[in-house]
Image (cartoon, rainbow, N blue to C red):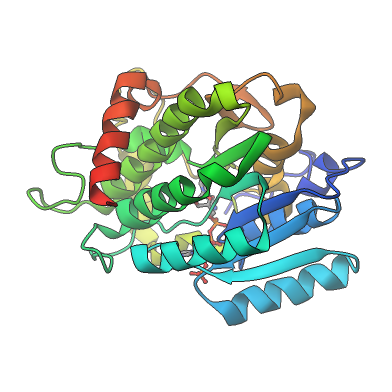
Length: 308
Ligand SMILES: NC(=O)c1ccc[n+]([C@@H]2O[C@H](COP(=O)([O-])OP(=O)(O)OC[C@H]3O[C@@H](n4cnc5c(N)ncnc54)[C@H](OP(=O)(O)O)[C@@H]3O)[C@@H](O)[C@H]2O)c1
């Protein structure tokens, strides 16, 4: 395996000198990996950080770890299962009680390459967890986003593996392919970001999509040995895009979380939105289908219907 990449900034480097006292950041998937690391970094800014995920015990462990590193951290824990719209509604109500105004909403939680399965509401697991659960949560929290607020959505260069099929988003009429299912959900994440930024920028709320790099977390828990090899042989859905290469240097979470934290706090992005970020900069090597505003609006209408 390649060596960890050193030399890139950590999430803690990004928040050095940043003061978010009095502000609230909501992070989904904050019990592990990139979400937990982002929570630690944002806690150092004085912000109230709301950690959301499925397993409350894991969230409490994350909270204890962050407090051991940042004794003054202000945190709350909210149970959220993105595979259940009922759970999303309950979690959103708890978040609204905790924080009348939200300054950063970081839609970070995710699953990858899972065996075929459906959520409580019948959605395919990747599309349901990575996109629709976040779509529903964001819709419920949008009225509470402060002016100057930011929505940071974790996507992936894996979006290049597949566009989202609006005629069969839940894999009811095709043979299931875990690579395409993850890729489609990560394309949906970028499209969601495009539509949110278009709709909310006049209110002073901007949205960003992030590829964190290839990061050593538990996300790959469903991968088998030959999946790594298969991944490198996959043709991208758009022929002008590069292939996915997971064999290059991987990042540790403290470095991997840098770009999403940069998206949340960087003054450089204050007048920008609807962009795809990686390595703490705006990147333009995005599959065109992921940035198409019309496609984004269509996905939004579909998501609205499915989450009604
Ligand atoms: N790691 C990488 O190389 C990489 C590359 C590109 C993109 N990303 C993206 O980065 C994001 C974070 O990934 P990670 O690497 O930090 O993964 P991770 O270590 O596996 O953490 C995933 C987090 O999501 C939560 N989660 C999963 N299913 C959930 C559900 N149904 N409801 C609520 N929370 C749920 C998990 O908590 P519980 O299951 O305990 O609730 C956990 O906190 C993902 O969106 C991923 O697609 C990661």
